[in-house]
Image 1 (cartoon, rainbow, N blue to C red):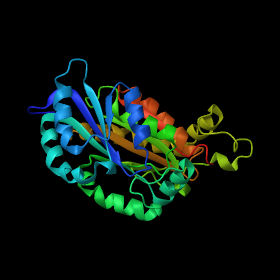
Image 2 (image 1 turned 90 degrees about the vertical axis):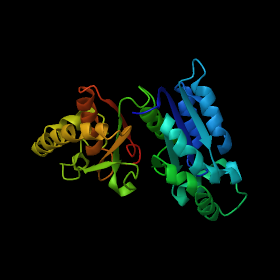
Image 3 (image 1 turned 135 degrees about the vertical axis):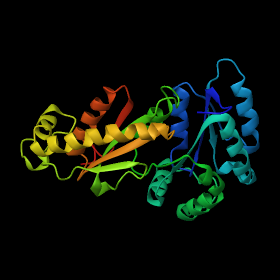
Length: 289
């Protein structure tokens, strides 16, 4: 970071569609040592951050902003750019597919904040109202396929540690039949590797087990792939850091997300950690296959 930014102070503005997981994410940050406040009017964000930055003992804050901000949301585009010039700050926007939002509202039986019974129309209207915030977002995360636990892990892995001084790398193993993780910056398809699913005695074991790991890692195809993948990543990761990227998400996909992709993701995690990198892994579809 350069210029007049307050290096020891870090702020996260957490926002998004109702039902996309903002409460889960905000709680995760609070449990990780962030000073959190929810539903703060946009016009008070500047005052709040300035105050916290001068308060001893407060070095990390997270602010929840959502549709309840009403008419104040239009001020977002005027306030946030100025704050980003002074402070280390990330604006994180959570979204989800309409089917996922509908399912979540049905499960919780809570009404939509806009008061509309049609969740699809409510989500569309809400997204339009939040457009000033989306334009300023540093990261948009699709939580459609993430469980609350996975979302919590994802948020923690990308916003704690050295709070932005070291790029956080999140590895997501997934199954293509369940859709790609839209938040991924890089995607690697490992469906060409021999599949343990077709080996009767291995089919029931997950990719995190030693049986599947031994099967996949001993294959010549795997060795050739990793011998190309690791030098490639080693050459480009420093470029992301140089560019000032705070977090990088790498997706590793196989057919169902149960065998091959978890093996590769775990091996990649171990390899990157040996390079003193801040790495975490999420096996998104492991329990679905």
